[in-house]
Structure formats: C-alpha cells, structure tokens
Image 1: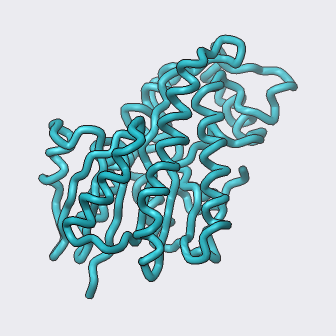
Image 2 (image 1 turned 60 degrees about the vertical axis):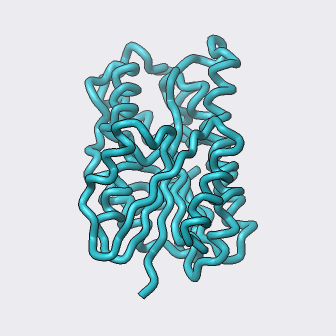
Length: 270
C-alpha cells in the first residue's frame, strides 16, 4: 500500500500542528511539515509527535513571505523520493492588526496580502505538478469567516451576546457585514477564497476548497479575540481539528470542490 502524502504549511503550531499530529498518528502516511524556521524549538518538536506504523515526517522550510521557499521545498522533497502529493493544506497566514479602512496602513495591508494571498499562490504553483500526479488530489486553503461578504447571521449572534460593544458597529449599515474593524486581514482572506474557487475550476482532477476552521483557541485566535474585547476565541482547538479532518477525509471534487466548508461539516456562503 502506497502512503498518503500530505503537505501542511504553517505546521509548527496552532491549526497546522494540530492537523499534522492527526496525519502523523495514522499509519502509512508521509507528512511534510512546512515551517518558517525548521531549526526552532517548535519545529524540532514535531519529531516528538506520535507516529502511526510506517509513517514518517519531513520538515521543510517555507516562509510565506519568500518568493523562492515553496519551490525550493518541493525540489527538496523530490530529492527525497516524493513523486506526488495527495493533500496540500495551505494553512500559514497572519492576522496582526485590525484597523478601519480609514485608519489602515498600506504597509500592513501589503504584509497581509503577501503572506495570506501571494504565499498561497506560490505554494500552489510549486506543488500543483505533484498534486496532478495523485490519484485523488486535494487542496484546502485555510479560510476565515472574516472574508465573508455577507454575515447578517453572525451580526445577530454577536449583538445578542453583547460582549463586543466597544468595537462593534451597531448600525443598520453593518447588518450585512462583520460588525468589527478588520480592513486588512478580512480582504486578504476574501481574495484567497476567490483564488481557491478558481483553482478548483481550472483543475480537472484537484478538489480545491476553502476550509473555515472557526474562531479557534490558538495563540493567534485568542490574540484577535482579545483585541475585540473577548477573553479568548470560542472554538476549542481539538474540536476544530477533528471537524476539519472529517471534512478533509470526506471531500471529493464533486461534493466539496469550489466551495467553503466549516469545521462542522456544513457548507458556508461566500
């Protein structure tokens, strides 16, 4: 039986590490963990995660700000005998600041676009030749509800909770948009959602979809929650990982391709 080969970017912590740990625990898998710095402690500790029978770990360097890292990483794994990829999860991303449009700095916008959009495109361009060689290729882009164009249901929920009054815009004009300032991260995610939908249309075999993990209790998720006046993000990491793995296992081009899926297994609107 040939192994299932999975590449995950941003794999040293948070969602990426959680996904890597599940695939590593399964038998007959090769997990390629892409991290910004393979020599740091969080990357090295990936080797300590439990492994299933005949499963191996490969750690490669991919900094999403680099225009050459993804291509170099693919050459590196090819040199180690990897001739195809079955699953690629574009997980790496940043959410550093939360301005209004009037207050956003172009330098912050450029940084988020570079990592969250260009980084995904570069990863796709580097890995797509190996994905095309898989019998059942899957590409999942880590998306975000922040990139939704209409979120009236979320607005109602947050309004009822009344926990974010200091940053929410409680006006009719915001009833179809996120009621919090997010003019840098959110549009970067909206852009990469479009790109992912397009990948699915362009590729005959590859099932490409946006995977929405929820607002998860990772370092980044909790940090953004605190910026909006919450003590922590609402979704447990284990719940998000288990749900996303179920989606990844079930996904086909016909059922999931070109769509956005929540960690709860439900299709989401754009």
